[in-house]
Structure formats: structure tokens, C-alpha cells
Amino acid sequence: MSQEIRLPTYEEVVRKLRVGDIVYVSGIVHTMRDMGHRRAVEMIKRGEELPFNLENGAIWHCGPIVRGVDNSWEVVAAGPTSSSRFTELGAELVRRQRVRLTIGKGTMGKSMVDALREVGGVYLIATGGCAALYAKQVVKVENVYWLDLGMPEATWVLRVERLGPLVVGIDSHGNSLEQIVLEKVRQNVSSIYSREKIDSSRSYVWWPKKIPGSTEACKI
Amino acid sequence: MVDISEVISKTAYELLKRAATKLPQDVKRALRRAYENESSPIGKAQLKAMLDNAEMAEKYGISICQDTGTPLFFVKWGLKSGLNIDVRRPIMEAVKKATIDVPLRPNVINPLTKENPGTNVGWGMPYIYYDLDPEADYVEITAVPKGFGSEAKSTLVWITTSEPIPEAIVRCVVDNTLTAMGEPCPPTIVGLGIGGTADIALHLAKKAIFRTPLGSLHPDPVVAELEQRVLKALNSTGLGPMAMGGDTTCLAVHAEICGTHTAVVPLGITYQCWVARYSTARIYPNGEVVYITHPE
Image (cartoon, rainbow over all chains, first blue to last red; front, side, top):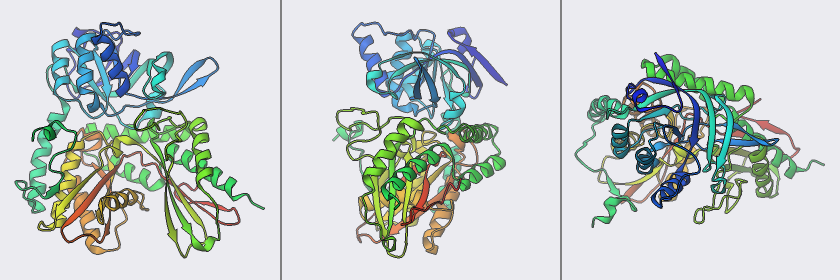
């Protein structure tokens, strides 16, 4: 059974969604990637107002291919980008702007799970690589901001009609599809290890000991 | 007289376009097989969206995925072709044209200043790998618009020779794949480069991805056995399409080896997302072009 969501949407609507539900979304969504997230959060922290309204809205982790046609824009291809890059900044936006839907691929970390539970929002997973399919669901480019960041990194304001199928990856009750999948995977992996005579208690790798640039590497 | 530069430019453009908009036949077949065999409803739905999307992209001639990646070219120079010309300039022209016409997403930025010229050309991109074939009477070009969802999950690890190497490799690939989860867009093609040096291991891993036909085994039975072990292990994890649970996590594992130092074995692991975009053609000195992976 799939569910329809029309934007703007509200806490009572998204609270009803559960991990694994299939969702189709209609209305206005804002695309945002690495540089856009950074700029938006910095503006908010400086007390400035964003040039667009995310309240009760949707952020799509997506850098579309867009073509200028006459005096308007046409989306040629649009699909999700990997979401785990936006865990911290995305959680900030959910908290400060009450973003109800965050759409991407993969998964998002604990800060996002917490923010979605506190504020009342969901993370929706689109099928990676399906840019032709999703582009056909974009009916209009309403506006574009921050084009100075380049076409992929700009924030495109898109009117979508039944954007989907999207799967609820994190619901507003602290559940994450990743954790459900991993529970099963963990059992499978231990039998793979024993079949392949792999000792999981031992490190087979000499280097890297710590990933340079990670928080772990700073702990000498 | 045929203008070979012109032929190279036109062919490179055509290769980028075909790669971005059409999956190779063997990849399509592998995805269809995965769809037919998938027992998880959520995994099956993901594979259905992938197949529908690929069909739609091919029908309308648009990019399968919006991340058309960075433009890479593998050039194999047949010494019997007698061709003695620059391929870089015509390939750069092809990338600029494809970026506007296909269109490809202008992804290429300066790695320090983040400047984006909007052309996918700059600071050494498109990147061209050169190889020689003493027997061939053609120049073979493979165009790879390499998406970074899968690229950014590549890794290099060093396994000490006191360890059992095949077991260590299975362990490392399983662990890395579980850390990556859905972000490299499974079902993936996994490329492994075993031995050599750091750069050789990763380069072999990258090149291995584009072995055709998809899923063909390495001629060395020891390497072939490892390829099958890794594939079986990955497809027993239950991660499935987009890591939402299911049977097919990986379409194929291709491994290459190189002699290495007695102390330590570098292992390069690379991924290609299910949108496996590569296209190969051979250019003959008379200007004839034969498309290998995308005959139409």
C-alpha cells in the first residue's frame, strides 16, 4: 500500500508514517547538496533569513541536470545523491526550519534520527540512479537559488507530481530501515565468516590503522 | 583523406552519449536476472524501478542517472594501426560537446578552489589512461562517465603476508561493502586490484570493472576462485538492492593481480553502481569505427 503526501505537510501527517512505507510526494521540493547545506546553515546561524521557505517542506538530496529552454528551465535528469554526507547539517535544518521530508539515498546518522523524532519528520529513500524516472515527475522548475555554486550544488525549487516510489528510511519514532536490514545482515555475516574461515576477532589489515582526517585520528 | 582527429572526437562524443543513456546488454541482462530471482518484495521493487528507469532513459535518449560523473577514457593503442596522432584534444572537444548536448551534468571542479567551469574539462579532466597493444591494428577507446556515489566508496588496504590472503580479501570486501550500505547503489560491480603498489592496486581494480562480458572469470583459476568466493559472500549478506534487504547485492566481482612486495599485499577495492556506464569502440586507420559494447 502506498501513501500520498502533498506539500506543505505537517507533523500529524508524517507521524503516521512507518519505516518501510512506500510514499509518493507532490508539491514543492528544494534540492540541496553539500555546498547548499553549508551555506543555509551558516546563514541561519548568522541570524539571516533563507531566500526560500523550508518550513513544513521537503529537501531533496539531488543535483539535477537542468537545461535552459527559452526563458525557463527544464529538468533533464534528477535522482538522489548519498545522504550520509548531510547527517549533521541536515539535522540542523530539520530542527531550525521544521523540514518535514528529507529525500535521498542510503541512510542518515543518529543526529538525523534524533532530529526527526523530536521535530516530527521523515527521511525518504529514492532508488539511486533512477534519474529519468524521477525527472518525468518534475512538472516545473519554479525557481533557482545559489547558482554561483554550480548547477549540481544550486538549490532548485521544483514542483513535483507523485515523486516516487520513495521508501520511508527513518520515521519520526526513532526507527531506521538500515537498522532493521542490518539486524538480519549481522546473522548472515557471521555465517559467511565461519564458512570462509574468517576470524572476525582479528585484524587482517596492517594499514591504515586510523583513517586520516577522522575524529579517531586526532586521539593519539 | 579521413580526418582521424575528427573521427576520434565524434566517436568519443558518441561513446559518452551511449554510455550515459544506455546500459550495456550484459549489464541489462544481469539486472533482469536479479529482478526475476529476487525474493524480497522491497528489493524487487527497487530492481523494477531500475529496469523501468533504464528503459525510459534509453527511449528518450536521456541520462540514466543525473550523476554523469567525471569523464574517464581508457585508450588502448594498437601499434599495428600506424596511427600517430594526439587523442587528448579531440576527446576534450567531445566532453565539452557532450556536456551541452547529451547533456551531462557539469561536475568537474577545481579540487582546491571548487571553481566549476561548467564544461567538465579542466585541471587534467577528462583523464586519459593509455595502454599499448602490440598486435592490434586499431585504437580502442572506452569512455567512462564515472559516478561518484560508487567511486567514493573505493578503498585501499594493506594486508600483511603473515595472514591468509584470500580470506583477508573476502573479509575486507565484505566489511567495506557493509560500511557502504546503499550509497554505492547496489547491486554493484566490484573491482579488485590485488598486489603491485598502492596506485597499481587501485588502477587494476578500476580497470577490472569494465571487463567484458560482465561476470566472466579471470583466466588464472586461483583468481577466478577468489572472484566466485567474494561474489557468493556479498550475495549472502542479505543487503540487497539499494541495501534495503534482498538477494542481489553484487552483479559481478572482477579481480586482477600484480606481483608485489614480500612484506605486504595492497588491496584496491572499487565499485561501479548498477548504472554501469561504459562504452567501447575501435577506430581503424581508414576511419572505420566499430562499437563494441553498444553496437547501436
